[in-house]
Amino acid sequence: MRLDGVLADRDAWVTHGRCPIEKAMRVVGTRNAMLVMREAFYGTTRFDDFAARVGMSPATTSANVKSLVEAGLLDKRAYREVGERTRHEYVLTESGRDLMPVVFGLFQWGEVHADAPTPLRLAHIDCDAPVRVEMRCAAGHEPSDDQIAVRVDRLGA
Image (cartoon, rainbow, N blue to C red; front, side):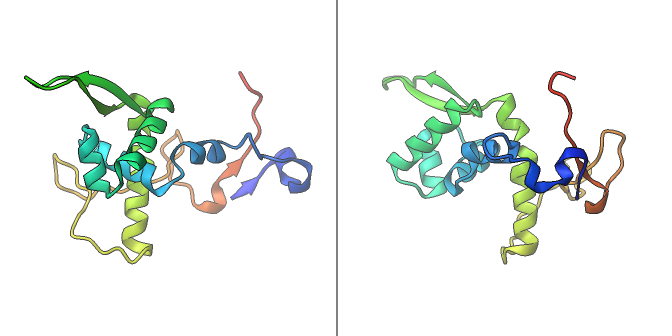
């Protein structure tokens, strides 16, 4: 990883409050929030199911789901079963779906580095080949760590 231009002098700039990683972690930086997102990717939509599948109390589930709705990662939709009161389900938004590579990257990292052996695997439905999270530039190259630069672009440019 290389810091280019004005970023090369680490003492000349501060990212606190402006870093995309910092901002993302404010939204999904807790274990419970990431596990709720995992469950949403797996198709969970009902509040009670989130709580049971993640092992959270109703209050903790409520706080996490509310936070993810406010952040625009989940959409709250009313539903009503016959003879029941109106309840809500929570479905992934486009922004939530865009988080999928991060969640699957954590899955992949955990398999290898977090002593989390599992019979689960990510597979391509069409050919059954393993699915891996990779970094690629827009031209399709797979840069190594030392081939990636952080640069400052003018906003709106």
